[in-house]
Length: 225
Image (cartoon, rainbow, N blue to C red):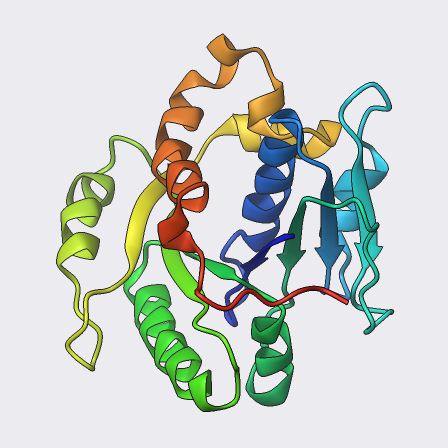
């Protein structure tokens, strides 16, 4: 069972947008998907509540109320939408369930510095978490064509963590009305006509390719129980 955690301790990073679109991506590829909403706000569950009946089913799991996290046995892919302000043992408990972490970051100096601190916290959890979970970041809500967008990609690719290691950046996701439309309809951008969301899909391509490659998987693979 594939387990992907969408995580950022700082609010406003667009975690739910990334989580729901990943769930829709895998469902549109024919996988049996469960979307676990750990956030008390329940935004991912709200998205599922308006999902059309004629679209591939995505199982809804309320992870904020039920800590045991039961997903259907036939599930191929579990997408977990983590709550904001997650730290310490709560963070460790979520990471234990994951093979892969996707960390959305809003492209501002404050958010990038917060992400650097959070990545350091994640590394410090390795003694508590018995898995070599893989992690990548995406710059979210980037204004295409803006000055910061033109400079951001090079900056993030060159950015170093305090340890001297490379910041694990993979792609930018642009600010787009397609995400508003998809949220309203309970769909992902991968479930609209390709011509409508071709530009957005192109930005997602590095992330989806990486997630489907062995490089995004740890040697030890935890299970959701």
